[in-house]
Image 1 (cartoon, rainbow, N blue to C red):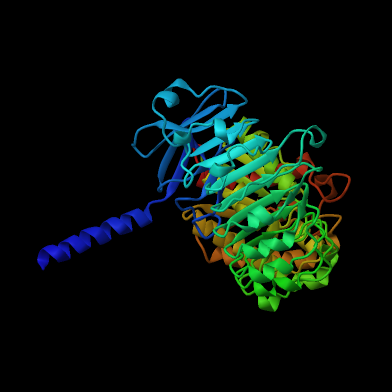
Image 2 (cartoon, one colour; image 1 turned 60 degrees about the vertical axis):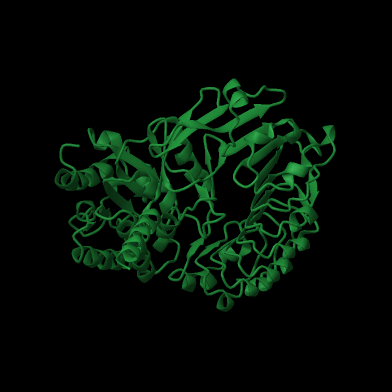
Length: 519
């Protein structure tokens, strides 16, 4: 009996240790934060074995939790990796046309985590390199009937159309009976039938971009879908099929002809809905969508209906401007010039973006992630891409100016500040976070009473938490008459000139000297 009890305790301890283990990734010794797409996991940001990620353009299927150490190949034809202290092995391979299989793999074939076949049939690939259940197979260029038998068994498959449509017949999808993850990128002239996709009853994550779909209503058969992205597509003008998708958590129908959102009332688990560049004019049935937390509406008629959107801001993230190009530019810059480790991170709107931080704070590992015109809700929405990956030692935020300038209330600004501060506290515990108060400006002086009210409320919140800080950059900007000094502003009366930034720099430098000495 005692022996049995001890054995149970050992097994329970081992189970808890495995559950507590997380994923970490490095490429050539540098920490990376690749996006992970759920398949076995239930949501973005909570990876699990069987989810998908991309490293150096290679799509990969994750194995068990651990530290994944990737080693790149200068020609980007191979990718090696080890998990924790395990043996290093080739985990991904790119084959173009008639490229031969590398000798090492030919002699000792081992199933890969991912393989890219460019203008090459599946049939020409040694079966030993592909585990249908755990190898991501990406076809680039065209889909050939050769190898369709293998495709029917694949759990992870993607196709990217490259050849000019007039030079080849339209792509024909195989029956993807076992697919869990499917990603298709088509050219404008491509048209595919949804019927082969509808036969994949296990399908969890589906992404189709470009071209046109025939028979989109057949997606109603994919009742296990949790993540569905249909973007820049013709042939998608109705969401009736979603009435049969009870487990749908993410739906993106950007740049489609969708206009009627009433069918979404059946999607009780829906958490994110993206309708960018559609013609939607009314909100979805929110009373039927209790889990909805993210609503994306940029370039829609609905985005201009401030009165309808404003009451929802305290309940969910709402994107009404397209910041993706700005965020992608940050990520591309990180690839070309890796940012400093544990930087002093400045986030916010144009007042941050225009600030020459290296000149203002020489010797400090500063990083500028300001994107002009942004609001606090935008900083919240992109937190996992512009804050979290850098693991900053200190965070300084300037937002709220555009919020109130665009008609938001001080109470909404304070509520959004609380949400941003909660993200910092939850995801970066122990990190000091400073708020640069909304500035008094010549252009928006009529809004100063509301801005001042928001500043004072946030200052009170900061006084209640040792890790939250309110830096007084307002006082140095006001003259003896209590109004903003014109000498600190550009001609537009809104943005700071070099003299204005020097006033801010003196305040921030004093705080950095206390919280980042000797950096």
